[in-house]
Length: 451
Image (cartoon, rainbow, N blue to C red; front, side, top):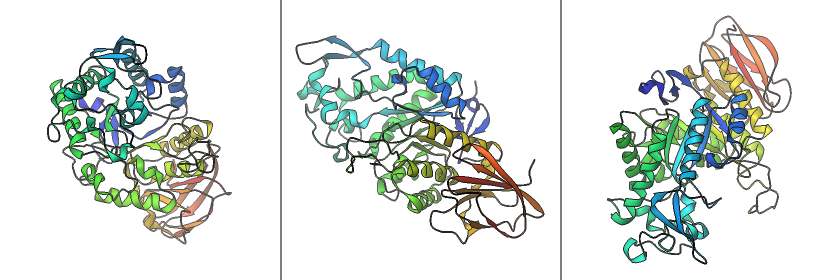
């Protein structure tokens, strides 16, 4: 197997990925984040594949199930005791099975090595890395606290400062490295894996950089090339933290911007486009979490859901990201996103229907071609002179400049909610044309020479 058979940066357009030597657009959704805990995983992945999906998230987080990678060696009256030197065979077997099932279906898995929230509040209270829960070190030797009551944004657990350029905590780092080594034992043989260091981190950038280099060095020793990124917590992409990824291609070969998917409407688009313009050299941009769901959320102020935006917000974010030139998008699990629900299936299916009929890998975001446009009414991507695509969140008309294309062009209208081609018409090239969707609702149009 060569590096081009693995998931890697597309040779002809580094904003995108290639897999098995061919360019690939990653679209996904799943109902849990730590993939190997999904009941009937094979059926879930079959469903994703059937609607054109090929991208999932796999956090190494365990707080939702208390299912840990370490062997339980004793169980006193209150606390379970773990040995960080020994592995929980079931955990790792299920992890490997998830990678295998995805690989068999050409589905790309984006792993998150450190599940940030596992190491705070009640989750930390039960975690094997907590000194009171393992037989390998105590508070004095490890320097780790028994209690961390704050939110991860306050970065008050020194667990994330163990690396040599920060606290240089050799005792804790030893077991952190053992965990990552075990992860890589299983993951490196698979060609369908991307590596993200953390979930929504706010800690020192030296932490993520250390693990990125550690993973890449291990892969290099085994003769393979892997790709790494970091996911920062700030929702504003202009925040200084994001520069640690944007400005350091030598450390991170792709850029994960899921937290921008808290933004809405035009702001969501503009922030991502500004960030994209600042990334040099070009690298794939991924969104492993598209937020937004109407499903009730226990912490929602209105008691009805929508803590991270409504379903409409999530759907719009998904389409704006792809039309914005991003390489990968996945609907976040419910209730924070729409997962792989029927509405998510329709969006993935429709996006694949559209992009399969065009050469998206030769296109760029091109809202500059649109005029008479209301805010958040339409988004365009194009290879001017060859083909144009426009996304309409609510079926409102817009003008597009087709001046770079001569002669008669074919416009095919896609009813996104129904995943059906609804209408075709002829439009004149070499002029500004008004595009009016057939009805209100979600629409896309593809304009080109036709088949």
